[in-house]
Image (cartoon, rainbow, N blue to C red; front, top):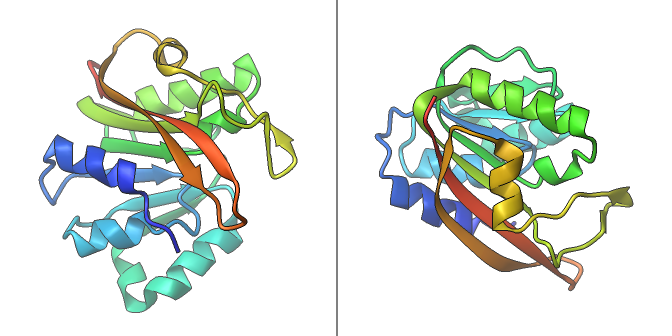
Length: 183
C-alpha cells in the first residue's frame, strides 16, 4: 500500500511534538496512521465517512489500532471537539466537496476543531488533475484556489504540485498546501 510521501515531508517540516493531536480526515484505509504510529505520535484520530474503510485499517493495524481514535462520520457534520487538533490532514476529501455549502461546512468544522497555531495539510486534485474520481465529480485547485477556499486566518507555509501514480497505472496531479491557522 502506498505511503503519503508529501504529507510525511510536510509533517517532518512542522516538527510537531509526538504528543501533538493529529486528525486524518478521510483517512479510511490510508497508511498515514501507520506512519504516524511508527514515528511515535500518540493517539492520532482517523475520520472517514466509510466505516468499512476504518475497519480495514483497524484490521491491518491489529492491536496498534487501540492507540487510535476512530470516527465514522461525514466531515461536514461531524461533532468534533473545539480547538483540539494541532494538525488537520486531508488528502483527497476536500476536492469531493463540489458545492459552496459543503465547502463552507467543511471549513467551519476545520476552524472549530483546529487549535490556534495549528497546521493544515490539504491535498486536492490540482488544476490540471482529473475532472472525476471514482465516477464522482471533483473540484480542482491550484495554490491560490486552495488558499481562497480556506479563507482568512490561514497562512500558507508551502505548496507542492505533484503527481500520484495510481495502482491501475494512471497518473493524477495533486496540489498540496501546508497552512498555519491564526485562530
